Image 1 (cartoon, rainbow, N blue to C red):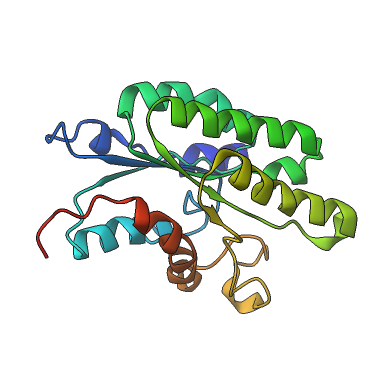
Image 2 (cartoon, rainbow, N blue to C red):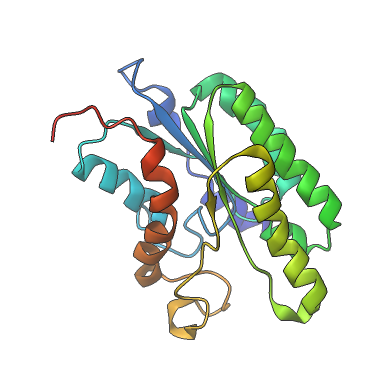
Length: 209
């Protein structure tokens, strides 16, 4: 994944150097599913969200700080610099699946996600937590507990939850690339529609329509 990770890092420099200093920023802290792994540039759900904000005349910058293969530990390590540089109004956290693939203990994943959310909140950002399931071959108990930790964190830390990023496509093999892990370009609007209801209420919509 190393080569893919290097290839897939979207540089948020345009957001960091936005000419309007008061323009609020949304940071997406995610893994390969948000980093357009295997997709043409600017066709992933994060790019589609940027386009939807523009279409609806909601004036936000979007910094895609997602890295293929990233874990909650990686996101936790990267977040302080992102908060300092971009001062986001909203942080969308889409991490955890790679923890499961690597056998990271659930307690570690939960602690990392909790820290990420709390650090973002301390930096005056609103947080959206994106839930995931892992394949059932990990065992039903693990699968349920893994998904359940997102709901628990959402309740405890009072952040909106996207129950499952891949809802609506998870049972459709044709919506996934050959690896049957990463969604296709055609699936990206579905992912955006899963995330949007949690994000939209947090947006300042004072721009004229």
